[in-house]
Length: 542
Image (cartoon, rainbow, N blue to C red):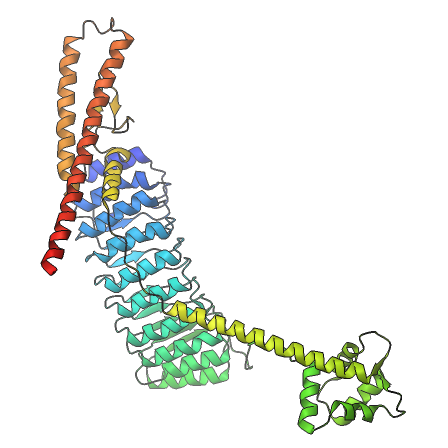
């Protein structure tokens, strides 16, 4: 059933839920891009939980919110028929992803899940990684266009490393980066079921691609790898192709879109094609060594080159200056200084030699004295040592941060609590307006919060069934009482005073409060029983 882009609202969702309650023909529901929010979607989600004929559910381009995520958690825990779920573009964040992960961890039916174009960050990624590692039915997962990076990327890849069912995974348009490349090496080495992997546009550079190549060399199941639009140089492409050329590799296609290659890379690709079925896509052929992802090396300071060269040839600073100072007046002009450096064979260009002379002539007098030369060289060496120490500390901190990220442990997924059961009960009975309403003497309909709701049957089952039955009985009693009161006061209805109307409204509100108290007592008993069961298990273990 396709109801896409037609702008249905909350009332339509309730009517649709009633129509689907006993339907045995419809197997797919698509509600893409209708501007629905979490409370609007709860009735549809509850129907999917109870209707065993519905196999596919698409809620893309709506807004799930926490309420809808909690409802999805429940159906994922209970359903045994739902196989396809599309939650693309539903503004899922870390909090919502936590509920999706909790349901997915306890599900054995969903085979296809689309969570692309959302805002899943580090926290949600780690929870999803834990669920991915535990699930045994999921075969296709799309997490493209999210905020998966750093610890989140490592969490997802660690989950894939443990998974034994996923065949197709799309992680494109995220930020795996160098840390993700390191984790991906272990994933490719350990995983034995993955066949299609898309990691394009993930900031995998020349430094990280070598680790991906190492993992590919040990992998024997992957058939298609998309790694295009990453800053990979020619050397990185060559390493990837050499890994694919190994006998253990089963790669049939590798996509290097928007990455140029050279003749050496194509030679390896042609050798693979001669040995077995293989194809490659790339961003063009360029006869150069480095084009994309070139290593940017900081140019070395010219004075450092001069000092190192003088040390190599065994010339002291004072001896160098005596060679330049032909008239022994203790100073030389810039031109003489540059000419002298060329004479001793310093490997610098004319531009760099002019730079050295200008930096030693601090006062801009046009000449360089021995004191200026020796002090300039000495201060430069001192600053260079300080800079080396700063770079060493920076590199050490960077390595420690990478080590910390790679040691990320997958956290325990969210567990349902008493307060969440109470919240979900209120949501499914009041926000979704699926409970038979309580009527006041003025024939206005009320929900538990005193808001209006439509006369629809309850769609929930399972844990809240006892409470639901009680609510329906209370509502029927209230309706019967109101009918009797209406018959007895029909003739004097016009003469009724405002105080009497207020009194009848208070009676209806009192009955509503009784139901709320019953809900709280029921869930409190449930909480007490759970605590007792836990203590009993602990006593048995001891």
